[in-house]
Length: 172
Length: 172
Image 1: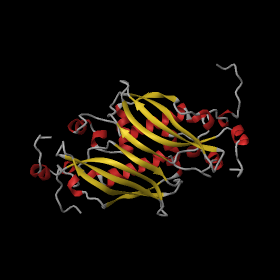
Image 2 (image 1 turned 45 degrees about the vertical axis):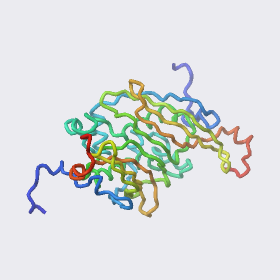
Image 3 (image 1 turned 120 degrees about the horizontal axis):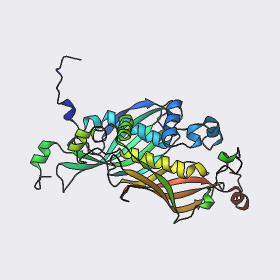
Image 4 (image 1 turned 120 degrees about the vertical axis):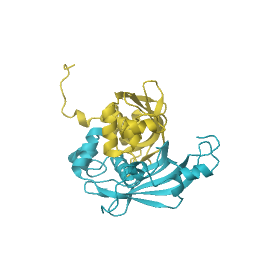
């Protein structure tokens, strides 16, 4: 484990650029178990509706018991995406997403697993140092049922050598 | 302020049902100022990318300085929506949303204001106790620039008297 010397510049040397992404790739981003207390704490901070906060009220709701805020599931996806991929990627943020669906309730004790399916990769015409990726973000539970899906647009930098050999005529 | 006696059943007596919502209505949901420390704490928990966490790294990014996670802006919307409307509404959750766009960066010290524009109201055919609302969720900053927009699908209960007088032939 410690036989390779540490390099101080490693955090600035991402190994996933636009040029490493291709339609059809599935990136597995890891998993996380959601406990009751965390579900309630998230709801108290951001989404204080009775069926996310209170077991008795949740039992009387259409959900029949406590469920996680849909935004909690999204945030769990985001954290797994950040740790499992973006921390090694030359990522530049996102302008938005479409088709977000909460497909099944997430309940205390569920283990959520995230993945990212690359749909489309397009170098930018006006800014040859970067490009646009469309990717389906998916979260499944321990029964492999999809609980969340959305299609995000993501910006990634190109590899420097791809920029130098490309048509980078305006310098950006 | 305290001249009216408290009623213990008030939390269970919502005054916004499907029947109170109409296309064209704009519901103003309140505002909240986002401070630097809160932006960094949210990012550390859910979206640890350099331009949300670290001022020096953010200054070198395409954003030119620290910006809030887009999910933080969404969560601020959700909390304002919960406090400003859902706490008084017979709301039953959401199956999803479309067309989410992060239109401008949100920076430390920005004051965010949320509103909900009702686009469409449709009683359920199969479940006459409820209906479906499409609504545009909007967050603007202190310069009245839109920073976030999305179109959500929301479920609301109907008023009991609307259900009794309607075609509730299957009891659900």
